[in-house]
Image (cartoon, rainbow, N blue to C red):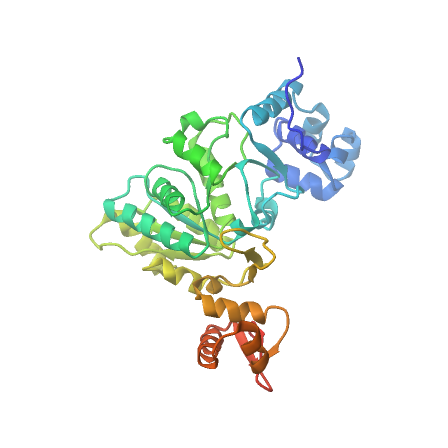
Length: 384
């Protein structure tokens, strides 16, 4: 009997899956094959001579021609269906754009259980020690809930300790959270809290680049950390010892050009030594969730947000994370000048605000660099 297959999987994704199951071919080899020949479907049609003529290593060419075991691919497709998991190729429409921007570090294939939404591009990673203190756990809850309140999605790695605390707090605050796993999505029973994973999939997503039945081996976690930072606009390390895996996430974030934050702790606490080292190395010392948006740079492209939903007709397109800290009046003014400069009189009519409140909102937006005053009392969104 032929195994079940996801209904929405396309030929190119199937070809990428086949390449990924060819012995000796890893993500970097797949990226190089795609660069050389354009598409995985074409790669699988080429002979060994055609591959090597295109600059492919002889062993890689031999592995491609030999191909994957048919049963391995069929078993993976069957598990995707049984576990309610999507398989996204790097070319797929639903593939997270922040990961695609990682270049050769982007996973050619991503397994996703749940939904990745446009608003999830406005995300902060919260990471910390597995063996955390009460202080670290409380900071995790405070930062997760505070950032959810500002519209951010919370990203972490579902490890016990601070990671799990941040996921739970985000869910309790009614927000979205993404968990990047160091095992396959058919191995949820190997996690410390499988029920939490299922809750995350309902209000966010579980993600993994690994085959569905991949076990949680130690070597899977450092590469997993690059995806945690890659999906985020910035990484907050809440508590970390001097050899914590969270420091690996922070290093990846720095290499990816993301802002790294560290929460200070007691100078007598070994659990905070990693955070203090990050601060000495140039990480932003952060004391409250409200300070996070102020240190994040502009988004690569706007994210439309509306009452916790993305893409609404009246949604404000968030271009800069600092906009998440605005009050209702400031958001109304910013939305009014979103598409074109407006004169002060036009703004009064558009926003229906008293002149005193409008002037205060404009001054606040100017100070933040979110609105610029032009000649003739006209205002435009952004800095010029």
